Image 1 (cartoon, rainbow, N blue to C red):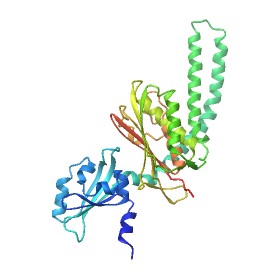
Image 2 (image 1 turned 180 degrees about the horizontal axis):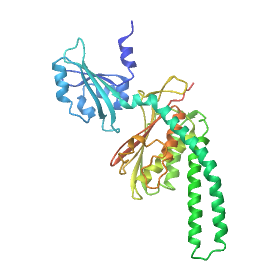
Image 3 (image 1 turned 135 degrees about the vertical axis):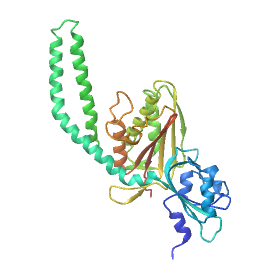
Image 4 (image 1 turned 30 degrees about the vertical axis):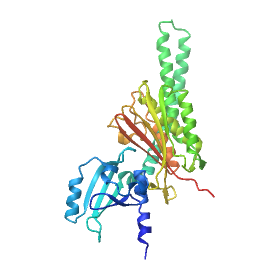
Length: 353
């Protein structure tokens, strides 16, 4: 017979047992990770002080307890004050043999989406690659001819007419640059997976950003010093972080703002890897800015190619970042409200001997 304690500890979703006064009586490791607090600090605490839910649940919870009936609540935002809320389903049920005690399961919707995210990102990237090959053949060569012809014409034109040829040349070069960015989807090689110190990657990206596109931003760092090494390609991860930092800096619109870099360990996150096996993604990076947030119309599709919230954006940077993280068998997500946008990267832990 299976050990009940082992089953409890192995549950892949956060689970809590609440006593008759809605105090936390027991909590599994997945819930410790979700609330980012140890069981020692949570046991005996009021659950509604530790769990923030954007729905009035207390009365429904009491009815379920009084009627000895289960309660199901779908599509609510659940957080704890420290992290961006996640859309979750809640399942609550009376605990057999313990009157007044209730079992609460928290099922992040994000976890279910992980199983299809890798394939959808790769399918979108594959479409972009195919389009890039067609565009490169059909457009880049004629553009080179147009640019050359405009430059030859400029040698015989009056200064008043040079503005037109200069416009032809500059716009042609802009289109070529766009096509070359699209082609990056096909040029990214498979990641060279090795043990990587994520804090080294973040520090390199921060220093580079501070000297360039994010010179106007303030920075805070909230690192977990005990975070183990990740399994990843340091150069590709640096490319992803730089892209996210650039987005955060541009969200400020040239005004001073704050970027917060955060790392922590959460053992409950898992996806199905490229080889079909389930992989744990306990290492978390969050890049948080205090800008205006993503436009609601694109928030769900921001990692798709050619989806951009900026007037002159190409919508390729985040799609490329998603492809790189997908190739790492990792996960990238975003939660955005005005004043707080959180991009989160979840990665595997490197095996150490």
